Image (cartoon, rainbow, N blue to C red):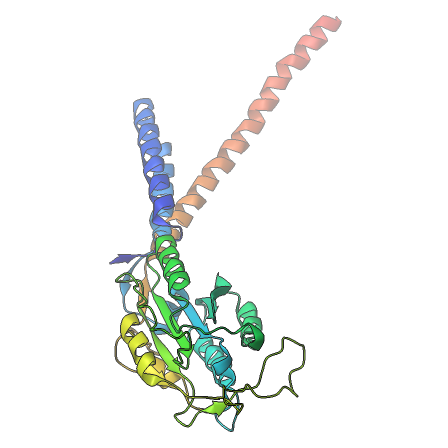
Length: 344
């Protein structure tokens, strides 16, 4: 049996302990008075506490488990990500956008975060179930302004990612954390990329997705203006159009550091097979009864018991209320007689 509390353990456990102590004290008082009313109320509260802990057994509908995932998209937004070698000479970022949307569709109800990096890393979206916000962030992904590009590292997001993963684990340790790194592996900072150095257990799954070809593609400048349709291509030191090529070796190194598979992405490729592929960090899902991706919830049993006791308590309160009304009338009758006697 496993527990998935509705609140962080550091908050829920003290509340349950304090409630148990208070109820124990009240029950002892009622036993001295010879009544069982407080016992029923104590059981009701304890049932609610048990339901809040969300006990359950592994196995069950796989799609239900996706709501307990934290998904981090780490997106390369350097100038090379607009190299025109994705599909029919489209920018690589087009493939990134398509895959982010497709992955989000495979894990409905999950919490998503978007981290982009070029010269530095930025949290574009903290963990949230707001898929509208995710769609907005995805649709407006753009490379950094070309004039500001000063060389970048493929692990520029390492510190931000480590902080966000650690915070997610501290807040909800029961939720697996998936990382999807989307980039081309091109290192332009002039030195070797620093290792990610993530703590063991921070990453439960995901994948490194590579974009681009060995032949490479030209890159249009990003001037920062609203329309860059007529922008010229970035030039190299010789004055010719610069060409960016994918570096799959470096992408595989990142995948090894994260403990997830590396997958080269091409236009039209589905993400379903990639996400179900067995391997480090693979996300297993089942469409039928039970499976490694699901969980059988038991909280409803405790909630149903609390509901039954709550109905019984409501009946007691209604009876007590009815008994109070005749008593009030009897109290008013002598008062009226006294008034009559005083009037005589």
